[in-house]
Image (cartoon, rainbow, N blue to C red):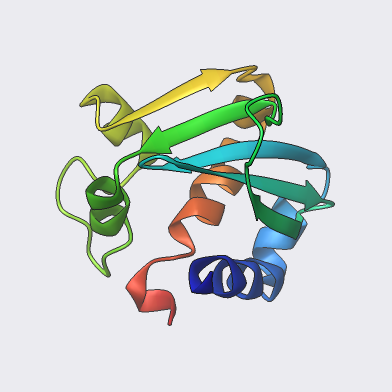
Length: 122
């Protein structure tokens, strides 16, 4: 899956992002349509991204949206209500559930990690 390889490369080459996430070591679930990806982070770097094959495999929290939603979020200049995960949450474009403490404690890290797929980062 090209998305995963590009995502890993973009995050792991961004020294500021790694520094911001230095204390983040966890796995979270990122959903696109019917596909859930398990993103394993160790010390701010993406260790692996794998497709969830068993429902019992899960991350500490889950962020889920439609393919169209993520495509809009990852545009060079996202449209209103798609520029930020909490704007998308407020408009019910995405859902977030699970143990949200690590997400909130490292909010800017996760926002930047997800936004690292923006076209402007190519």
